[in-house]
Image (cartoon, rainbow, N blue to C red; front, side):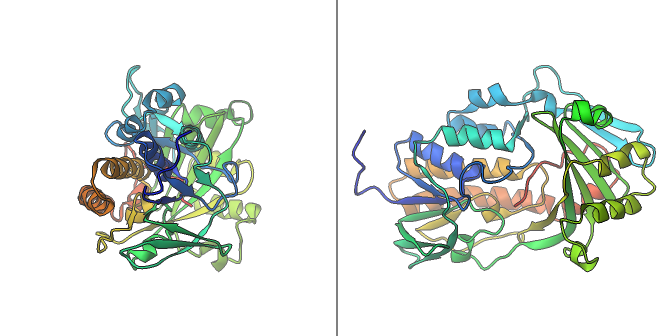
Length: 381
């Protein structure tokens, strides 16, 4: 085992999601030491969310830089690229995309499977679990001090914020906060679908299914392991549950409310709203202002949702992983960390601003009864 270089910069990645882990993996492939800190108690601490489609022009580019593209294809589900669009009131099939046998532009993979693939590629002990960041302290020129919720501290020469929508690292760079989009996803889970929910399994097929009436929508997606997740997309106040005197635990009352709201939908589709296994999960959709920028600092930067939180339109995880790979490569190829950050941010910013401007306000577009929904798949914490 090589002796650690005492002069090597101390690089700390905050957040063990796909972005943070991709960054750590690419750094380690280039012989650069890195530590990842995550608030979860361990890799099994919580459900990792639904399925993701990794695109050939960003997510797959990052996996190639991580040396994991073949391993990804071994676990991915190309058949998950199928997409169906239904008419809400009649359940008539309005449109369908069936992937070609060799179509690999954006195969599906369960988020948990992707995370395990990345975790298992890292040197043992890279991720420090149970480290919830409270604040990044110290001068912008460094060194920085990471203060964790349990009172412990760690020094760092570079802090990489891969800590998502409510990033604590972002506070050291920018005062921007995510704003509520006006649209909420209510997530419902269905298990053992071929046996217990055969009608839903037939309706959804191998990929995704969408229906909308202009005010509300449903998006269902096939996950691995005989699971389906359904997202009920509604334009409601962020506090819609509390305003009705309900909590997330009031499953039957929420179900009754949904039956009322979707009363004129086809019975075939209404079944997928209510036969879920277990409670609903409330996911209000937030986004950062567009454009979101900050004065560069030589000791801190952001990637993914921490840098450019957008509505869940199939780009979030792909951009996070591309950001992560580009940042790691900039660090590996630059003389100094400040030079690497400048190089990385000058690539990341224009790209994310262009995409964020394109999807700004688009969460509401999910409610339109249009065809060809490509907008899906982000699990938001």
